Image (cartoon, rainbow, N blue to C red; front, top):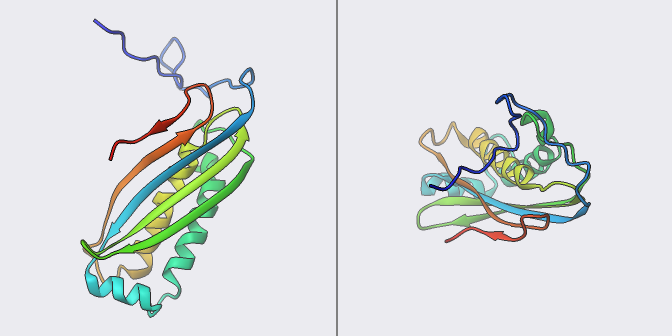
Amino acid sequence: MARAPKLTHLNRGGDARMVDVSTKAATEREAIAEGHVAMAAKTLDVVLAGNAKKGDVLGTARIAGIMAAKRTPELIPLCHPLPISNVALDIEPERNPSSLRVRARVKVTGRTGVEMEALTAVAVACLTIYDMVKALDRGMRIEGVRLLEKRGGKSGHYRAEE
């Protein structure tokens, strides 16, 4: 029987701990994550027309996602603070079904990866979209927040299956 992989955020006694990355080499690392905000077609039309009562939904969500990536260690226990070198957040409309696809790409040269930063950027951008148009569409759904790809580090390259 195969052994379960060791969870690095637990010590031998099962207590939570921050992983010691001091002996790892600083390498270029990148992570890409995505998520969707499903909504009614008329809600998407309002967002794309720029007519939301709270203002620029897409611009605000983009800034919120970038800010969230930079503040991930304040939100997720045991995450290392990282000198992020780049965060790019793109939001694209999709018509069938009606939604906004949010994608974040985060880069760092460091001793640990930026998967959590990319996922946090996507989640917060999606939540911001929801918050800005919830008065129009309480039935919106945030779906499919996931890691698409990561590069760098000891574990190498990962790409999610489609």
